[in-house]
Image 1 (cartoon, rainbow, N blue to C red):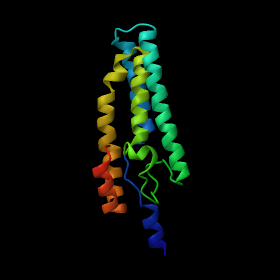
Image 2: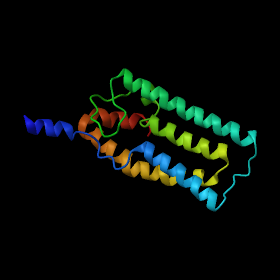
Image 3: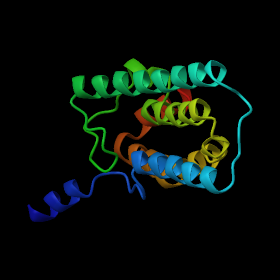
Image 4: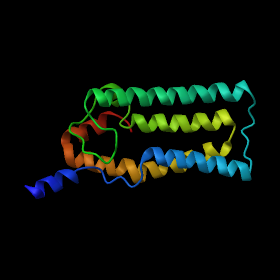
Length: 159
């Protein structure tokens, strides 16, 4: 019995870094770099702030929708917890990773709103690390856990 409890406790994605910390770290590094070596975007006032805030709002809305959907299906959004079922409805019919899309939109929006080019420049490496350290381990876990159902979902919905 103890062995099956241990297996159940270890039944999760081997995520190396928590996504919110990854994005927050990237934004903080962008702010720090901006203080030392300015990389302005060339946009001023409302031409910068309005689109930036719109992206932040869109990202926050995507995350809120996803979190509400996960709560509704009794799933924990923490990537290191087991997934009792495969979610393919709601925001998950548009993206396999809607929370991460929201986080990326928020980072881009903050960079644009502040006019900090470094925050935008750090987004591609952040997304690369997200893919390697979070998404690939999650996908491997979901493939192990749900087999053909996840493979079919993967073929029908983009990351």
